[in-house]
Length: 288
Image (cartoon, rainbow, N blue to C red; front, side, top):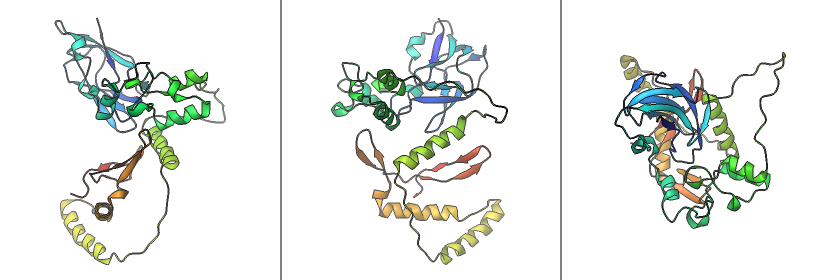
């Protein structure tokens, strides 16, 4: 019987992912842990390995398609003697602390509702806003997402709302381009940042003559090594030092649990203009 490869729960509140590209073709022989597909999520690009050795039979989710966590994306025929059920959990499926808490005894809801620690419902801020707009009480909604989490479909079902309508008719005066991939993720992140993060502007002046002199020395070294040195890494280092002195600024808000999360690591994102749009690679432990 074919084994269903499903989009795993990678934790951190991710409920869906977009298939970027398949790394194998239908009919190919695959081994356990061979990389099969690249998935784009709200957090990062991930590559899913094969949980079994066998024949890659069929692709169920094409490149560019958005799938929910737990939905099958491909079929694999396991090799003789392999028990597919034994491989039902892939390395990417292993629960993170947050998702594991929701699935452990004592944290789930016997009624099937998405109850977290202290009876709090498990739902992302987007789902909570949708519930508020539709007048739905989340405490009365059975969650069908990972670990009993409430997803958008659960709220729409409870509120009697229909999913968004299909694409409108084409017009000769306009061209429609699919809104997907990295551009789609960037837009969602920008909207979330605008609505959830307080925006403030502080203008000040500082004498950075010494910093510019240091960059000039580094540029000479960079030219010999074929590396272009800009002032940005020096600014990031200064920001890292400031965050060490003021740890309250290196924090995030967990709205679901109503907690302020103070980060022990100093990771700084750096905006980069790439061919397919703006990307923000994260420099880990920038204070090292």
